Image 1 (cartoon, rainbow, N blue to C red):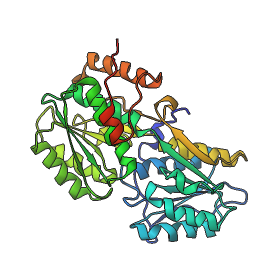
Image 2: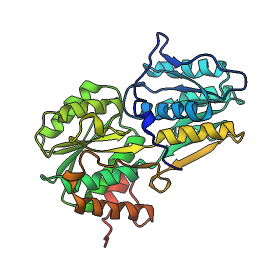
Image 3: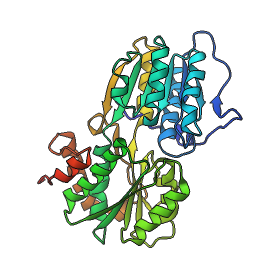
Length: 347
């Protein structure tokens, strides 16, 4: 898949929230492609996972002429009602954003076998018999490995940290990849770990990140959705050489020079490609896995921190990235795999 990053979507994180918690435009024209989306908790404006998905919807509107509508979930209790509401409006494709919607979407999809659905980060086993659902997952461990390698290169204390959202197998991929990437560069690097317990508690994200810094870490990778905004607040007053690594979307500009990089999942690319397939009359189904080899996972371009990182570290990071793409390094996606990981000698 090609990277369709365009400056026109730089402001896609701005949420248009109406009284009914929906984002929509005028009614569709006859024959117009209709795309609906249900966000996870955290909603639009999280500068992370939901915003990345919405960006793909905006691109579908711009390039494919699609009519779009978004229903925002304030809690897990909203998932099934929101999915059902869009189903009753007969959209051409309905996106569920987030693994936590797997059970609810499976129930709705089974009750509506002619409706097309897509779920981002869904549990593939939950949709084994649902031919009307396309499940998109990412190799988060690939980009997280690069984040861990860079963190180990940049750390002056040989002590870094990971902050997760909810303790789920999905977030375990981030943690495992990050810790293994650090070990690839410096096996002596210490990695502390904490979990927020949610993806939208910004205050808790800030508090736990402060604790990680106070505990000696000088770089925190925050894979916590909207709660990552709290991590960025936490690093704001920390001394030079202390960083946060953002997640899902490009967060570098939220605090230039203090966000070392962001581990970007190009959810927007998947959303657009699924929409285009529907428009072209060849709807996708089954399980699609996207990683570094598909250019759907990776770090940002270090536009605010390139000078701090320096050419030697960037060159070493490029070697590691190439080794992952070529299969010489296989980042682990479980904690058991991370424990067994051994650094791979590179030229």
